[in-house]
Image 1 (cartoon, rainbow, N blue to C red):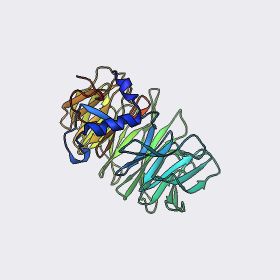
Image 2: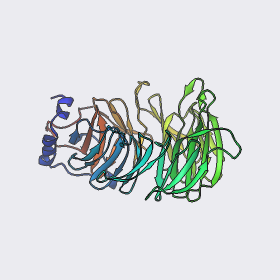
Image 3: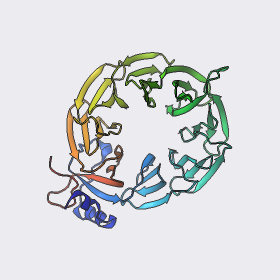
Image 4: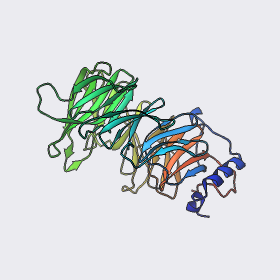
Length: 383
């Protein structure tokens, strides 16, 4: 039986098999070793393409090409909304609430457990309000081009509204990303609307008052004909920004000064402890987050055209999705294993208490650790 035939088993049959075999449950949260072979507990055919999510003990609440919730034990769909002007295509979660943009010019808050609409905020013009962040019961969003607004998450009351450009500037900025750091600082990446001479600006604001703590211009967004948004991540000390030349700068959250810069860093940076890891041409590269010093590099694939998702941290491990392989690398740079999935992987894994989720060929699949030998539902082949 080939791998696709195994996946095509009905949800009920797959669930029964997982129960009958009695696979020991291993928790990803307890630091236990987690390696192939993996088996699938359930398959959700036509599963959601997930842009953002929230995990409770037994539920996955998500937003993407649809919004809804799944039971993590069975894969059963608890509720779903898709394909209407009231359905956000991305969102931000806090507690049991989902916030998102709707097509007919507005922002909504839904109960993420039931799908019940809590409130709707209408705006008069199309806006870039799909870029949002929720933190400490405040929703940060671009309600008007060139401004960032803080709303009270419970009832969408405006707390403050701040222009992105300096006072007196005629430059119009558009928000590309918003990040909250420890309830203390709000980071905003904004770009000009002129795509021929575009440039990026980073702002650091106080989440409570909206006061601008510092503002730092970054290199032009278009370099050598490449128009690619900046990739950025942050920890408690620095914001790490990758530009279109694959160069990375570490900006101090204290005052915006550049702590270090490093060239040829790859793309899709991810923070793991004291390391920043990124990908380039089939290689995973690690840098010291305090100094920018290159620590190690490991080749995962010689196929440099292979599509990749951003690395995902699981404790001290780094999991990387290629086109049809899942890789696991230790924080020392040693390749622990690679698992041939024999299918198109479409996103980074989502770790849950007793396994992980993968989006494979349009289906969402939950995997467990290990399987007794000889069972036909094992989802792997020998390396």
